[in-house]
Figure (cartoon, rainbow, N blue to C red):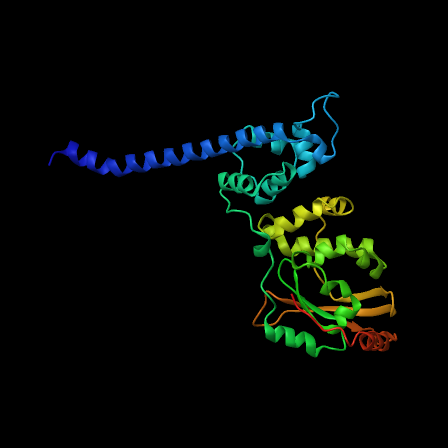
Length: 311
């Protein structure tokens, strides 16, 4: 066998690998171009009145400026401009979800831009609701009948609660499953604004704890879906979210102002079952120097006919 033939045989895998690499690069470039072209086209088709925006120049009723898309989607103008230019950047799923909401994309269109960026299809509403709480954790909640207690999933979906918590916060039993998220309820339910006297400080701290725990998962569903929906609610969530505060959860005293039971002074604790560390059980125990224990008993006796539920 000649030396030329040996060198050719040895070099062949390298050539194949080089061609494959170039194809991957070319494919990625094409996907970025497709995403850029799609975003530019959809930006020009948005009806401004649907977003509460006036006509441009007094006459043009459709089409958004890049600055407007960036503001409505809560991304920087530079970042969005780079997307439309097909730059070599990797947009997060959260950013694409926000742009999809701004453009009022259909499910198919939303799926398309996610696929171009290498993400799976958006979740359906049914998929966004976590599975029910394990039965043994629900039994634990029920056994803590003297104290308001509930359980949350990693994204803070309230997956179970006991009778006393339902007496403290009745809306937990009636809100639709998709909205039964602690962060969502604190920022959107007027009842909780009245229940929590220091709502502004407590909501900011809650959001800082959520951000600290979510960490790098913020760009993944269901986190991105939750934050995207909350950003659409306007202030004060937008202001609190933009502050980017981080805080670790600690047990502490809380005060609730219940419309029937009055002021309740409790200590907040959070535990995780050893066999289900993904579940957090939150318990409010009465501060012993107050009459909160007696007030909670009267509250639950008044709600004795109301059955406990779980999500």
